Length: 395
Length: 134
Image (cartoon, rainbow over the protein chains, first blue to last red):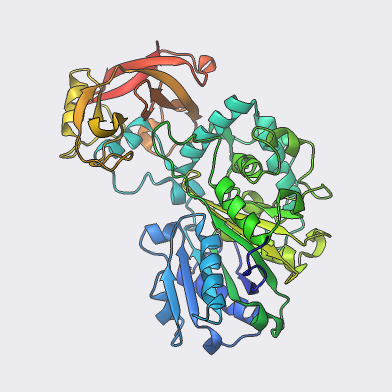
C-alpha cells in the first residue's frame, strides 16, 4: 500500500553545469549557473523561486563553499524556505525529500536544491584537493590518524572494501567489472568527463592508490554544480518540462561507530532507507527498472546493490560480473557513468542521472523501460544514506 | 635519525592515555553502567550516554578487522615507507582501533588473524600502539 504522497511531487527542472577541470570560478558561480539552467529547463522566472536548499561540497568544509549567503548572491527576495544542509553524500536525496514535503504542504512552491563545489585548482592534484594532508593537524586520539598514515576517504573505504572482499570472496576482478561497465555507459554521456572505453586490463594496470583500490576504483573529483527544482505534481504538469515524479523517499543512518555494533564493510544505511522508500512507493526491488547508485568507489556499488535487496548479501560481485548492469543488461546501473566516470557532485551525481532517465531524456544511453528509477545517496564511510525513487508516471 | 612523520599530539583529556603508552600499557575507557569499553576517547558512553568512566588496561589482544596497503603519498614524510600497511584491529574488549601491523609479511595478513599490541617508541617522548601477529 503506497503512501498518499506518492506521485504528488516532482522534479520539474534540472541544471548541470560544465563539469571537471573547469577553472576560474568559485562554487557560488557554479551554483548560480546550475540554478539558472534548472529554472530555464522548467520555464520558470527568477521571482518564482521561493525555496533554496544548499549542499556545499568539500570547499564548504574549507570555508570557500556555498552557504546561506548564496541567497544574496542570487538576489533572491521571495524565499519561504531556506537551509544549508550536510549529511555528506546523502544530502542531495535528503534535500529533495525535504523540498518535496515542503511543497506538498504548501510551505513553498518551487524549491531549488543545489550542490556546488570547486576544489580543483589549476596545477593541483585531485588527491591534494581531497586528501586533507594539508589541513591543520588534529589533536588527541584523532592525531593518531596522520601518525599512522591514514589519509582521506580513500583509506576508510579501502578498509571497508577489504572487509567485504574477505567476507564474501570478492576480488579486484569484480571491482574492475563495475568500473568497466560504468565507463561503457559514460561513453554515451555528453556530460561525462571520462568517455574513453576501458578494459579489465586497463583497470588492473591503473596504479594502486591504497590496496585493494586501484585508481580506477575511485571516483573523480570535479568542479561544477547540479541544481534541481522541486514542486507539486499539479504545478509540474503546467510547466514546459516533463516531470520526474517522486514516488518514494527514505533515509537510513547506521553511523560508523568504532565498536562491534556496526558491521563496517558489509552493511550500509541502504537497507533501512530502501525499505522506507519502497513502502512509500508501493514497489519492491523486483519492480526497479534503472538504478543510479552512489559510487564513490566500485565497492560502494556492490554494497548498495545488496542492501537494496536486488541480490542477496555477498552476491553482487558475481552478479555484476555477469553483465546485468551494463548497456543492454537486465538492470542498468549508473547509466551516466556515475562518479567513477562522469562527474563527482556527491549525491547529485546519481540523482541527476536518475532525473534524466525518468524523463526519458538520456539520448543514446536512455534505458527503454524506465518506469521505476531508484537513486541512492551515501555519506561518510557508509554512515549516512538517502533514497529517492523517481518515475515518469504520476500514478 | 630524526623522526619526520606526523607525531601524535595529546590533549588534556587524552594525556593519561598517551602517558600510559610510554610505559607500554594500552588503556581503554571503561563505563561500568553498561559494562562497556570504549575507544577512541569520548566524555560520554555511546551505549547509555553515561559520563561515569575509568581507565582500564586492555589485554592488547585482538583480531584484524580489516587492512590495506597505502601507495599514495599524502605527506612527504612517508616517502620511504610506501607502500605501508594500515589496519583496523578489533580488541577482545570490543573497541576497534585504527593502527598498523608490524613483524608480518603483507602477503600473510588476513581478516580475522590474531594480533597483539606492539609498543613502538618512535621518539624519546612518543610511543605508538602498533600490532603484530600473536
